Structures are given as C-alpha cells and as structure tokens.
Image 1 (cartoon, rainbow, N blue to C red):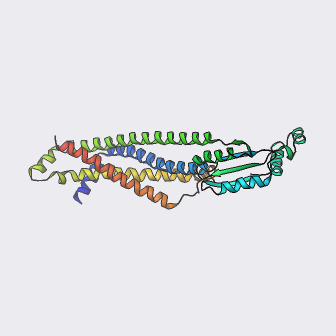
Image 2: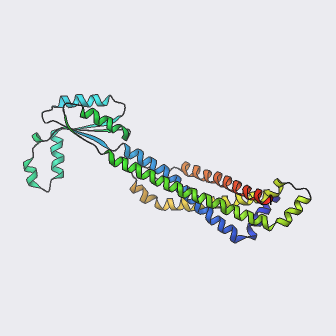
Image 3: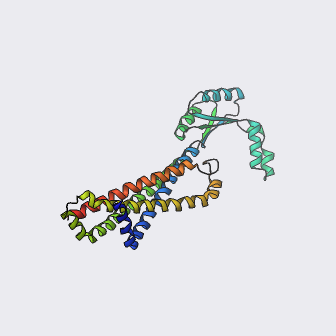
Length: 289
C-alpha cells in the first residue's frame, strides 16, 4: 500500500512529465487498437473478396444444354467449387438487352442464336480459380475462359503492404513509449538518489526500493491504455454508420461486445507488460550506478 501511495505521489509531483508520458503512450495504444481492428477487418474483407471472383467459360455455339449440364455436374464434384451458375442463350440475350438498352441498332442485330451458353464458377479460395480455369479449358466444348485473378492478387498485395506499414509504425511507437517510460522513471530515481542511499544503508533491498517506480510505470501505461481505448471506442461508434454502409454484406455491424472486451483486456495486459519491463529496465540501470 505504501508503494502504491508513493507511486501516486510521484505522478502528482511531476504532472508535466507524467502527462507527456501518458500522451505518447495514449497515441501508441490508440494506434495499436486501431491496427488490431484493421488487421481483423482486412482479413474478413479478403476472405469475402476471395470468393467473389468467378471463372466464366463461354461454350461453342453448337454445344447443347446436355453437354453443359454434364460439365457442370463434373465441377460440382470438386471440393473447391463453391457455386455454379449456367447462363443459357435466352438469359444471355436478356442480359445483352439490359446492357445495350440505349442502343436500338445493336438490339436489332443480335439474336439468341448467335450468343453462346456460358457458365460462371466460383471457388471457396481464390487460389483454386486456376484449377477451375484449367478444367474448363480442357473441355472440348469450351471456346473461351475468362477470369480476373490479377485483381484479387493486387488486393492481397496492397493489404499486406498496409499491414506491414502499420506494424512497422506501431513498433516504432512502442519503442518510443518504452524509452519515454524509461526516461521518466530514470529521472524519478535520479531525483531520489539520496533517499535511496539512506534506504540501502538501513538494509532495504533493491526489490523494495524499485517497487514504487515499477508501480508508477504500470499506472502510466494503464491510464494511457484506458484513455486510448475510450478515444478508439468513441471514434468507432461515430464511424459505424458509414462503415456499415461501406462494408455491408462483408462485416456485420454493430460489432460484438466481446470483440471490444478482448481488445480492452489485451490493452491492459500490454500496458502492464510495457510499464513493468520499461520501469524495471530503468530502475536496474539507475541502481547500478
């Protein structure tokens, strides 16, 4: 209890130092909360878009429905095939008319006889689209196969690049926060050097001496974590309507309360670890002098 009161007293006696440390730590924890949400969200977005690209195969004009159904049934037997949609000549003509309804001349020139039957196949994973494409290309009834895997690959590359940049930036902030706590605690220990010598003279061990400083570092980190989470939670609540419209059918809003609970508890654990490690490093370094 005495160590607890000593830590609070030290924070009150140096409010500007403590405030600066809390501000830096708050920024770090805020970005950490946002980065964790972005990482999980981007993973869900990737999982969603991985199933969206389709392989589209166009059959030869002389191909009849029976041959198309046979190929479709063969594809359904594959574990990696998620969905199959067959577009016959009538449907193809209807789609063509909808896309060219503003051009009557094109509508007059095209009939269902000159439009091929097509099949659209989606996979559970984007990597399996190439397998589907190869199966369709090997069919004697298929004239052309089209799928845009490069779009998905570009999305994955950009997402991974953003994650790496965010992680790199977060690591820099963690290092800065660690050094900030170290400097703050080192100044505290330095200002109490005479008192520490007296305590050592009367038999106090290093563990007893360092305890208030460890608690101070932990308090600063916990306060920053709670403040950062409050700002992060408020920002997320404010942007939820926009995110809900932008990410509809991909991520369900509002987010489950368990998600925020895990983040909050994770932030507290990280705060305790960061505060303890940084304070312990600073105290041991100063006590050796």
